[in-house]
Amino acid sequence: MEGQVMSFVLDAYSARSCPVKTFNTFDPTLPDLPLDESLREAFQGGSDFRDLVLERVVSSEGVVDLRAEGTWAEREAATLAALGAGTPVIVGGVLPLDLAGHRSGRPDALVRGADTAEGAPGYWPLKVKPYRVREKQLGSATLQTSTLANLLALRPLPDLRYRVYREGVLLELAHYWRLLESCGFASSEPLAAVVGDDRSEGGDPTATWVDLSTKFIRTYSKTAGHKLRSTLERYDHEHRFRVYVAENAAQRTGVDDPPPVVRPIRVKECEWCAWWQVCRPQIDDDDLSLRISKAPLDVRELQTLLSLGIKTVAELAVADVEAILPAYLPQTGHRDRAEQRLRQAARRARMLANGVDLERVSVEPIGVPRSAVEVDLDIETAEDGSVYLWGALLTDAEGTRYMHFSQFEHISGCRETALAKQLASWLLELAERHPDLLVFHYSDYERVHLQRLADRSDDPTLRKACDLIRDRFVDLFGFVRDNFVGVDGLGLKIVATRGAGFSWRDEEPGGLASQTWFKDAVDHQSESARDKARERVLEYNEDDVRATLAVRNWLTAFDA
View 1 (cartoon, rainbow, N blue to C red):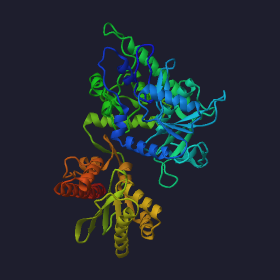
View 2 (view 1 turned 30 degrees about the vertical axis):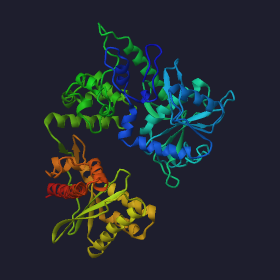
View 3 (view 1 turned 45 degrees about the horizontal axis):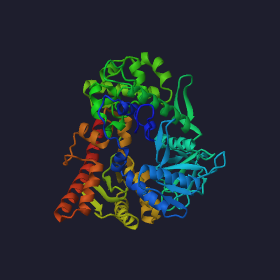
View 4 (view 1 turned 90 degrees about the horizontal axis):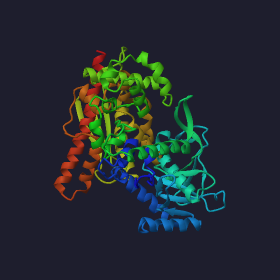
């Protein structure tokens, strides 16, 4: 965000971002803080992914690359010239400021579409994001796709829909669309593209084209409870509100100011926001948004509870849910299962108030299957998602012992498949010798990766190993989910430590941490450091499978 009173502009991220951030940014009584959203994306791998995609785009014919054009003004002038010339694809352009609409923006790319209503060259905005944006829906015909090599060649994308929870990037694209309208280069067809990690053709990501006027985003409606709105409608509402917030904040003097028009609520974005140091002191230590971090209520749900006099965990813990539902539900119709979500939050509030980490919610036997020969399975993946370690804990008449199939190198393709085949061959041989073999895993991570490698390679050994999934694989998470509620969720670390009493040898166990250890095990200049990192990964993986066994034994004890 940048600008000053009455002539300020908001960037593309503002409409999807916390409005308190907008208020703080334009409040002259607060210090200036650096707010660079690119830092968050860099930490999450988004910058690298975007660079790779854009390099692939600029390698095609008819593409103008303006990323190194110099100053903002120089890039803006070059962008206008390229737009006027009808350039097929413009990468790294800067659109002219829309002072009347309070907008500024620089999309990742602009793609030539249908001409404007006035006959000028028309364009569609494109944004790159490091995640998938499509999911299956039979009969859906709302999306189109194109390749990075030929972004202009759109074709239908049947039986797939846009993942609505990724609406944030669509709001950014709607912002660019309004900027294109303000400078006279918006196509007569309101399309926009997201290049996510959806790889339907070969190894390259592909563009997903969305009609910004299609009504598919479920939002709150005062008259109907909820209503489907288009991306442009959703964006216009959010942008107008932030303009109002900015104007209100800019009028503050520090003397006899009215209360702010927005108040801090703990959301996911707070994790990387520079304003957290300003917001946190304003939030009660027992605030619902601060303390209930798993399946948290959204901002509107929290605001509805606040209007009913419920702001803290202690207040929700003693609240009569039945009594507040008639007033609560009409205000939260934008959410599926709003009543269930409130009841779950109330249960977690009671658990927090009573100091309970895990609470059983079932009365029937849990029924975890057991066998004379059991394997607990856990994998480790590198940052690119490739599986470099399959860890297994074998339990039989001889006792319990850990083994692993690993390759501490940057692997992909054939080498990743070959490593999985080692694990598959071992499992198949074990299953042949022990028809009652059961393979346990926590959640579906291992099963999904085994199936992915089998589908990609069509290797007969992996295909045969996948046949074991139906009868021999047991997802332990399902038994935990169906029988327990966890105040901090039901991840393996939570359930194993707070339920089964297991402890990891490492002080900072976690999948993301293990990816850093793997990089050290492979790339560190010191041989000693590589050896220590490798040992750390293997100990962590062994503890993961031993934790799974501990959880199984803990669950079985309930039925004893």
